[in-house]
Image (cartoon, rainbow, N blue to C red; front, side):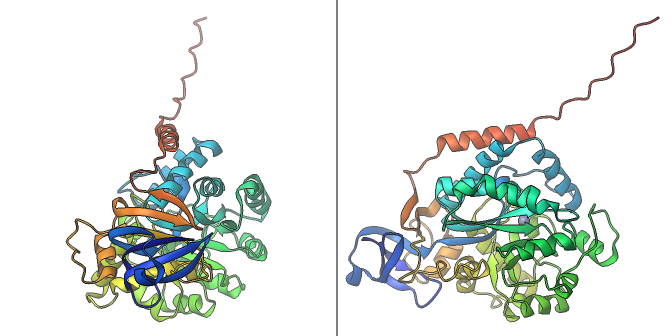
Length: 431
Ligand SMILES: [Zn+2]
């Protein structure tokens, strides 16, 4: 048995424990209490022990896409990513996803719900020790992508799958995946992820069938509901522009939502109605999306943006508390991914997924409120330790990934390589 102790143990459930400790046996939390009760073990001064952060929506395969198309309209931004992605293969995608998974661990994240173009995220999470549900993306008309993409990628990464790294499927959106494809995906009986109501362009397309989005069809949340395709195994990222009727449908069918406030802000999509989503009883988690839209897998920045956006939107400071935000990033995300029986809080019997955040040198010491200290003062550089399934996966100042970083950077160089110039036809020799 190992024990970690710190100034505070903060869990998503129950009161914070001053001078607290967490005992770990194998891959499981065996006890949570005070240092007096459990012993000192390894001590972290000026620090808080938290449940590992749960990132409800990411794309690890875009870890090095930072800055691509910044400031462009949503459809143009998307086009830049699709064109650049076409320049690399699965090896590069895996190298990039490994960097993303490592950056998550170094940011105190222990689980991701990852929408994956190639399934490479499963290999990456297995390699670096991150917990994940990897949802393989499918697009287009018909159902051929179930075998051509979903099953093919699932089989290719089968050796990386385990209790810790599970596979799901992601019909990309209501308008880029056909109704038949949605139907086939739901019939697979695995976990589902999608993107709902992210941009106004999407709204224009799904409601009027017009606009610049090149899509297979104008679908809608209502249409999915009519066909019995809203299920509780589904988590929908964004939901920025949902009307009251759509919100009621999500609640009625127990569809979860991944709230991604930084991504929505940086792409100029808007502010999702967090207060209304929570009031409707919808399971809401917090997600970073990917560096393609947000600059990082930094859940602390996401927490602060979540608070700021909700308070700006409602012009009320009490619309969301630091405690509620932290709950969204831990137990809330775990509920949204259907993993809350195993992770999301520090409790005996749950998987030993935890992170230690040092607040030393910040204006938050001496302590008043450890939750506010973490939410307003936390950052990846303050993460001292990250443990997944009882195994230490990141330790500040010790864990380094030089080869992994170098490989990901060379993959970014491939993405940035200028497309091969089309050579002009050779001039015919003069007769
Ligand atoms: Zn996404």
